[in-house]
Length: 271
Length: 271
Image (cartoon, one colour):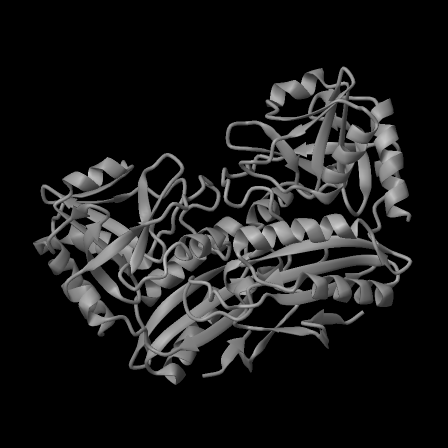
């Protein structure tokens, strides 16, 4: 369906937009099912946090209304919401009075092979490492060249995702997913204070695990720690949970905690 | 004047452009004087290097012809050339067959106060530090949130530029300039292998200095080293050279090597 820019159907963007010039903005990728945007509160809450950190002024209630209206029209698919700082004057200085430009785009439902969720995936070992930048860490901002380079490292369909490390060699995330380990019944995921994206499904699974009394650890994960993991999985808010069955020479079976969280994720995404 | 997209007048861009979605592209900011794009070979050479590193396919001779034609029409001003990877499919994976989209924009000549060049400027001490990312270091790519955040740190006109350090506290560059020190007759500038932009004027001044037999050092510059500098200046390909007369409690007079290189830069930009 048509995209919307600031609430109006549009197929083009001003060439002066700071999203193009500098990647000066944020985005959300929201699964839509039966006209409902899923995990909407978490998406909008992350977006609001990002706006606050980037000092991007916008009307969050208006965004919610537009997303709901767009999702109703889309029906089933994936809604991409982009906020940019609008048109720029010359130079990097942001106009403190600027209101964010709102871009809504609709795509058909994601068509990943079901086997990814059933039997799990193999992770490609990306050589591209994430830079340490605490000012941007956690945000789903528009500066995504690291992901573009990492994703271009492999073409074969045998790897459904790639694993990205930070500069120090810690396990951080997938190119478009967050990553979890299970060890001795504890759910472990990377601390994202220095790099990485704080995924909406990651936040939801952490919340669900705590509700279920599952011990959770958010910490630095040296790569060697993958060897001692009982289970490994990746997640995002579009596909839910994919078990990881292999990374290089390492391999894992699909474990019970992975299946439990996958079931929870699936229920949220089939809502 | 009108912008051009792929050689045609245009005022809007496809909403699917990967420049918007991911900052997946490069740019050049080229001074134009009397219809001539200045330092064009250096700009196009940096762009070609960036295309090669980002695997961005384009016709470099076509770009040269378009820039020349656009500059002729612009007369005097600043030409901004943006290359993006064009429209995206869903996801980060670049289409290996994609040809870069060419965007040309024209602005009036930059209107900086003449006093910046005459008496020098004060540098703002930016708290925003540049991330270490060797894969992107040196490139003038479209992921510029660090510069946006750094430039938003100050609003007063008393600081014409800001100094950015890397994560380890080395002096790297200005927000929109490169930086040089002079000590004991040697011209010193930061090594940009881990972060920073390899400016066209920086490259030209290094070339000119070597031609003049001035010793040049490209190295890591601890912040403390500013204290022992005899001269400090910043440069870019639009304004040329600005002496730096103050940074925090430190101050410098405008020195002879700064003036010599400023004169050279001015001659190149008045061409």
